[in-house]
Length: 308
Image 1 (cartoon, rainbow, N blue to C red):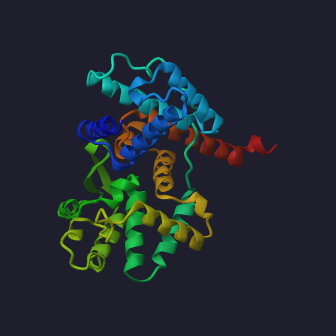
Image 2: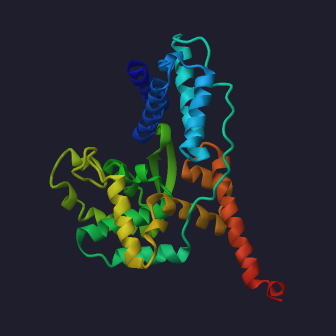
Image 3: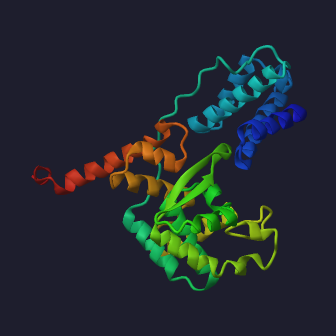
């Protein structure tokens, strides 16, 4: 199992450009299934598992009270793994292929009001020192572009400096997203101004280390740049300072806020899809439901008959 799992993970990296988070999730899911098989009386290996074994595993996940979305992800991981074993001609049939996916309802993404974003930005500007300047820059860039947190914290300094040389507003910036796919995002004047201000104190965080000099947001972490966990902590602290419940604030929720606020202010879905880096527009369409809630609230508040 270990050998085939490692080969499978290597293939995900080479062929799909899978992120470390994706690889960790696949490894966890497949290892959990392997452990389940070992606890049964047959003690089969993963390669020997049948469709009935997988169905038993899914029933076990239901008993653990896992969410349908999580169970669907586990089944998807098994399908991909067994497809890989088929390609390697190690097994003849994919035992997970004919098993029906659990029905997963689309949940609306959590987001923030424009007033909440303003409160967070104002609280960030009240922070003193280099950490405050960096936090302002991180927040302004995130809200201006809707970048994934993994894309934001791993921005190379060279890409930023190249973009600044264009001297354009809005400033075009090429970012590398999932699967190493490149896309264009645009930085507002406010985001560019805070970026330039941050660059004047950026050396405070790299301490002259050439390894850290590659990244816009250097940090003495294993990767060499600010970790997503640390950025998340900083936003939680900022939420408290803003009088907002910390559970309502995260980098991903601010990405959702960017998307929903863009739609509320007239952006079209196709443009938003490109800005967010969604491969399928159905992923972007989820924000139309948030817009629907916004429009309903507008009608209830402003239509004269709604108050009768």
